[in-house]
Length: 365
Ligand SMILES: [Zn+2]
Image 1 (tube, rainbow, N blue to C red):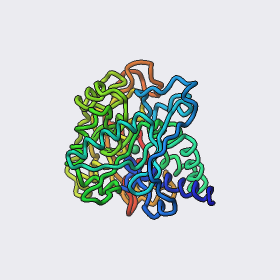
Image 2 (image 1 turned 30 degrees about the horizontal axis):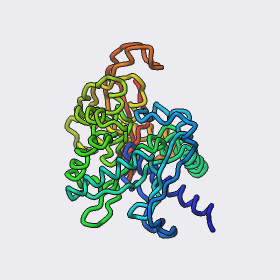
Image 3 (image 1 turned 90 degrees about the horizontal axis):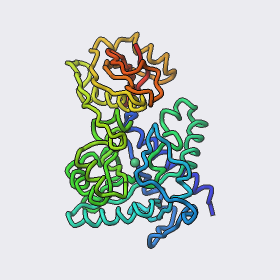
Image 4 (image 1 turned 60 degrees about the vertical axis):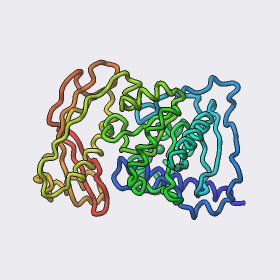
């Protein structure tokens, strides 16, 4: 009964989850999980079931240290080699996780419970086909431009690996699944993060490192790497997985938000995060600083100009950030920039709708 219906509902849940998870780099906060109402239509499973997808026997297995991000796609053959486990979480959703990552997660969970911290898994693996279907649905519904902005490019999400896990919290017996609600518990996340490396997990999307990871801070998104020593190194040094893989630590970005009467510091920081998320795709480039251009940037002409570029966006406010960055030092990275050059006073323009977060609209000189 209703198999297509279920798949349809699943896709919607996924789409919502995706739109929400991207919101970290797209403005509004949201939930990365489905509503309990959705899960009510499916009978809850009594116990975990195990199923291997693909024929692992013929494959080489997966590389637990593979980097998958907006620049690096899922390695070829991954989905054939991947072995996963399915289980039902506390809100009744089916969650699929890579086998070893699941075992490590159970150990992490048990370890945390000893300290009175309770977690569950919101989502883990999402296949490339799922992502393609979501992209198609969003394109048909909202057009290609919006779909590209809202949905992660199929093949380029770390969730494809089965090694990326989104946790949620159980506080005083209640499920805390909404992103903005989970952000209210920094002290719980601190305890969780302290335990990650011991179970071969790392935190992926660090606060302030959006220009390296391409994502806003997500205390719940953890990644299994199957090596506690490397995890200790990464977590101990507080670096991103990108930096570990590149064998290079990026310098801190400096900020000057000036003295605005229009925007709060938090609002300007939010704009800077959007710029940094976009900057992460500038392969081999190094961001040095970002500064607020001043309240003079928010003129009716500028707002009109942003609305002309992003037709139908309905921006009511504009912000300009200015920054310096360095172009790639070697030819390793394809780039439109002159080699090994410091670009100064580059401009980023963002617009904001009445109820939305900042959207990067234009950048250049
Ligand atoms: Zn995630």
